[in-house]
Image 1 (spheres, helix red, strand yellow):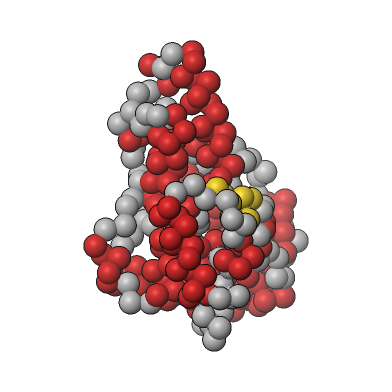
Image 2 (spheres, rainbow, N blue to C red):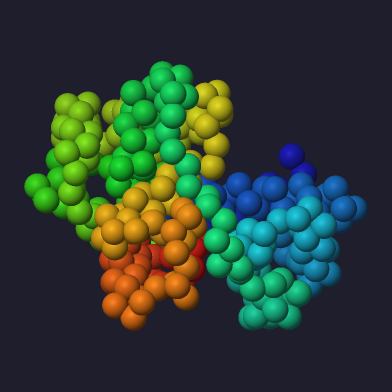
Length: 287
């Protein structure tokens, strides 16, 4: 292991900011960045050696690789964390635009929805299978679906998600409105009992690795698309017509009354998905 990778790992161990999952993700990103810097010729670096030229070289590489603006910004969050911990926060501009990172493109009307098909039968871990079904029927994120504890969450007509399960530590509720949802929850209760969808002998990270390995072996990818499928199904349930991304009418084609319904549906689904910014719903539903 080279000096930079070792020192970044030590930095992460000494500064346990955020949830366990966030810490693991940060360590993974910084380890990747260390390798990329080494590949680009920046050898014999230390954690305290970080300079703006290193950041600019990384961004140029990411853009040449075609990484999305969102991915670049997420990685910059971890680089800023690194810079702050070694007393070099001032070397990185506060605005990503100064580093030529474009704004996120939210509205594409591309349908990113995914549905579970017969490949679900290839999932041999019952905990992973239940997590995937929760993502499909309730729009959970991966972490939420793994940490889910039915004995706490199930309130009869809705689910209460703990902040410690959710992105940004923001608790929320999700309605239980279909017989399929109730039937799934009954199965999850029987499997998890008073625990979660993490087997008693595993940590969250270990079960997440099982989840990722099982999905890869089954040929399942981009499972975040299950949230898109949920959002589109809920939109149709609330409004009575399909979302633009699913082939429905664009907002420009709606009557004034329908636009009120559209706005209500988007606000409702935004809350159920745990998003603070309503504009993000355009990624799921289109416009």
